[in-house]
Image 1 (cartoon, rainbow, N blue to C red):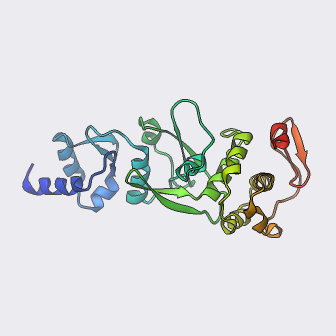
Image 2: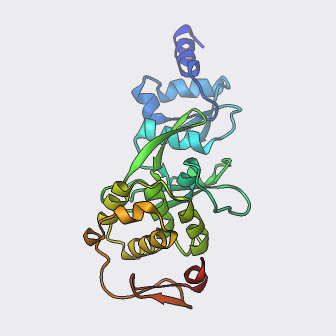
Image 3: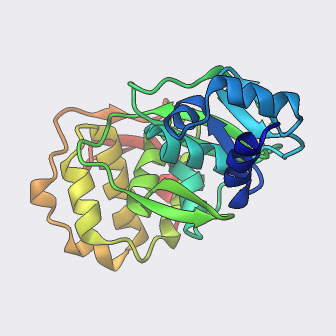
Length: 255
């Protein structure tokens, strides 16, 4: 390895965080050709995770590092969402069995690559596509030295409702709703006005009212369109006429 190659290698390693992934598009843009990366691989500094995806040889894989790199290097839409985002903000009741799960939202235009589902991360990454919110509310959280695009709590809970009943249990989500005393009514208002998913809006408002949160009374419900017709959320349940939804009996009777 010549002096120039070693200097460029030192630049890569200078601010290295364990678990970081490097993508060929970013590498090429920053002066690291495919031939140069091949040289680094032959020298044992880097290994290939997949075509165009590299990691430092010996590093443990990090889901947070992967998502951070996808955003910072490739500007893709992947972000931490649903209950995983709520956990980052300190809200949690949902405890999956087995390997911890990381819920990752993304738009239709960004496809999930094979390496993202087959790599042995510390989490099982589960991906969901949503174009539900025309004005999505995302923020950046620092976790383990990585910057993560993340749903704000208000959107994260709505995403959980979106994924019921296949991904989440209605009662588990209501237990989380009871913790959400600090939601911002202006953010909730914007999200509910800017989605056409009537099931999510009706269920959210029902749970929020049932939980008795102070922020619920600050919503202008006249601007939140709930659609027409009944929605049956469960086969055997109780009909709630105010929001025109059939909900599980356990949720209806819970006090």
